[in-house]
Length: 304
Image 1: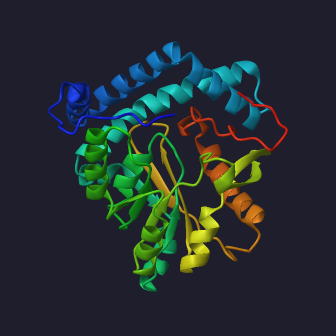
Image 2: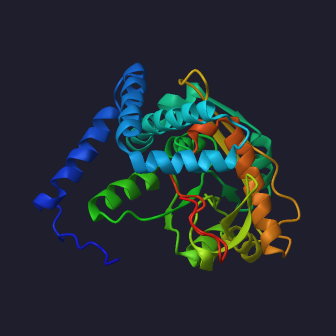
């Protein structure tokens, strides 16, 4: 598919909807908390009603990952997932446009001693995050306690890419293009922590097949490769919106021991096992709208 061409000037009318979206995000970031929750829930329910294709993807993912759930339970979880991701839009706006200091009183951070030990040794760490609806706000809250760079996918729209990158550079130390492996390695070797989320399907060439909720899933090999190239400890990080929808919990687990092992499938399976653990705490907050099982082993038909 050919890449979309965008005008060079951000004053071009084609960018006017983007300017409006950025303005709305800035406005929403300053809404009272109750209003954010109400608007986010409304956005999620609207998407749940209208986004038939994404609803199907979400339902398929949940059916594969939670076969023990009844059809009614699964349908309820699909709806809750859309609501959580709708609230996540408002959380992203808050994380990008506000000083995270104003949310310090809403955060409980467990397991800080694990990262503090790494910091005391002067090492850079590879932080393993997960694509929850709270992702960008979680990064902002994490910055209150520990510095980190972030690996991300650049946005196709140049104006929104500039807005997003500036926001993330304010929250994190540096926003690193996901294709810039040298940049990731260089930052870690110079003592910086790098936040990286290895839980999406990037195709056969970048992956091995490893179990994810008991289903063979294309799981990227880069986590083990970065750890091998840098000698960095791999730090699993969980972050969730609590049931009150007003507070958040971040938690570091101990660094993965004997990682990488030299076995790409075993290493990918260990990373997937951590991601499963994080998801099971608050499954509705995960980005189930993504086709996690898009790439299949040769000979298998599409699951979607």
